[in-house]
Length: 329
Ligand code: TYM
Image 1 (cartoon, rainbow, N blue to C red):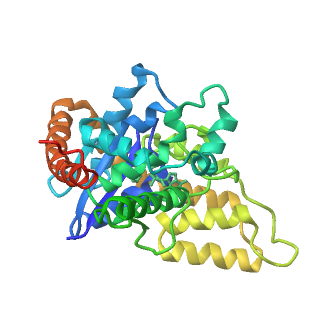
Image 2 (cartoon, protein in one colour):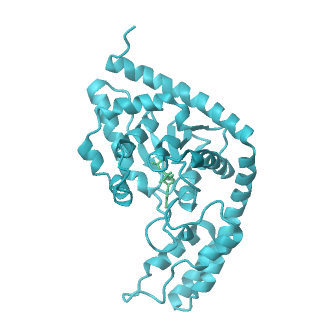
Image 3 (spheres, protein in one colour):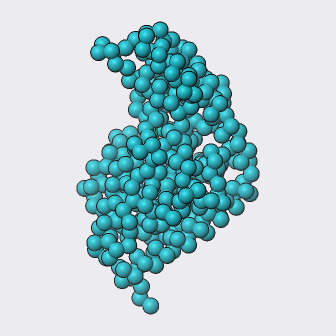
């Protein structure tokens, strides 16, 4: 079975982007692949170092993954910090990562711009740790959203450099989505993508109440009429792309037709979309809520997942040390 690896940072509440960019694919892949899915708690420390938030976030990410259909019996579901081999591989890969290259990564530049007082080395080497996450299991396919594409390219570079310097060990991992093109779920205000910590009214979280979902949808950006050249305005495209994810084909057809003939009422469209979102999110929210209350169960999952993941990680590190020559006795 092909090896699949992917992770989600424990920096806040999971949203529709996390679901459609990542988790939906996790669930579809769990039958046919050898899957390692984890909570990237070390990664979250690069920007969210407060211990008081960490625990709750880690348990919630686990619960929301399981509530979305991930089966901890079929995949290895674990927390990054339970696998010390990842930290060891990160150290080794750091020798193959160049400062100039890391400084050019767009996600790093964004974070420097947003928070110039906390440009720590962990933030700079974020893509190296991420590469270690994947390469530690010799992962081949990595289900992620569009925003992770560049990080994956770096993982391939490090794999190549390691293989060239020390001998063949790592495959070159590629980003994966069942629909081919990687997904980017737009924010409801038309500004960029949905994200865990930015504009909360423009992001639909898996934990949002029915009323809040309806309210957020009603405030979503729409437009009046068509663009001058007759094409669909960006904000309307965004609404249709959300509809494609949760609404039935006849509903989508109906609103496409009314857009074409100019009779569309965006209030109606957003109301419909709100209702369809509620139908989609409510069952996940309720399941996650009850799972989160059962920490004993989640602890068991974490431990079980870590055991499986450590076995594979230890094997890779054994090979890596041998190739580098740091196996002295
Ligand atoms: P994170 O925690 O930001 O997001 C988790 C997953 O959700 C996807 N995603 C989106 N997809 C579509 N539209 C959006 N608006 C959207 N927002 C988020 C992300 O692409 C991601 O797949 N660096 C990673 C975590 C990580 C990782 C790894 C991933 C650490 N190590 C190893 C894969 C393999 C991150 O910050 O994801």
